Structures are given as structure tokens and as C-alpha cells.
Image (cartoon, rainbow, N blue to C red; front, side, top):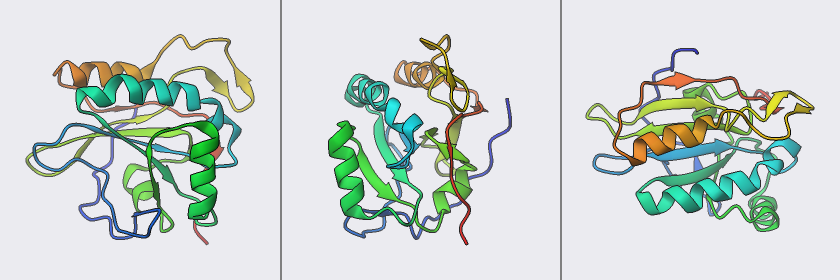
Length: 179
């Protein structure tokens, strides 16, 4: 496990598909928020679509919000909409063309999840990492996961159990650095 970084206070360049600035992190009094970094061309992200749908269906009714964040600035809103439709994600989609959220969370691959909770001092990240341990290395996977890290964090939060901040190593497609 690794320590979690302090998260930037303002996200000025994270935008929805219409170009409006959006901060997916919860404000005071709001429930937890999950952001999952994905790419339209990442086979690992795409294979997780069914599990990501199940998590949203189970936990959104329990006050947890879900967002997909597309960090590749070349992915257009129309390509993202098509990706959302093709894989049936049902998540709200954001673009992070300046990597503000990528840098704030230290995400390095897709898919990689970050979970935020509201705190008196502002949003606090309590988890960053893999969805589960199905992938042991890029191109090597188990038939089924033995640990469902993201689900465990969401279960605890939904039950009102405090979560000790932690990270796990995510396996997937690299988030290329900005040029």
C-alpha cells in the first residue's frame, strides 16, 4: 500500500462533454464519489464495463456517485459518447485534457479508480487503484478476481464505516504524459 496524495483544491480544466467545468469530488454533505479513468481504446478498461455497471447499479442507490474520466485529450466528445453507448457504462463522463485530475490522484493507467469522500477541509481521497485483482500483469489475468478492492471500499462507505485511505496497484493501459 502507498500513501495517498493531497488532492488539488480546484479543478479548472476537467469538463463534461458539453465543455462545462465539473468537479466530480463531493462537496459538503454529499455522498462519496467514484471516478474511474478509462480510454476508449483500452481493452482492459473495456473488459471491466460489466463490473463497472454492476457497481454503479448497486451503489448509486446508496448515495454514491460515479464518473468516467477520459484523460486522453485526443478523445472527442462524440467518440466518448459512442464508447459509453457501445459498452453501456451509464456513468457521467468527463474529459481531463490537462490531466488535472490525473495529477491530483496520481493515476497512471486505465482503468484506475479513485474514491472521494466529503470532509470539513474539502474532498478527501480514500482509495486509488485497481477495481479488483483479476489482472496480475498486462495481458495476464485470472479467470475470476480473488479480491474486489473497489467493491470492498464502496461497501464500507455505504454502511457508514470509516475507510482508512489506501492505494493498490492498477494494471492497464498507460495514461500517456502530456506533451
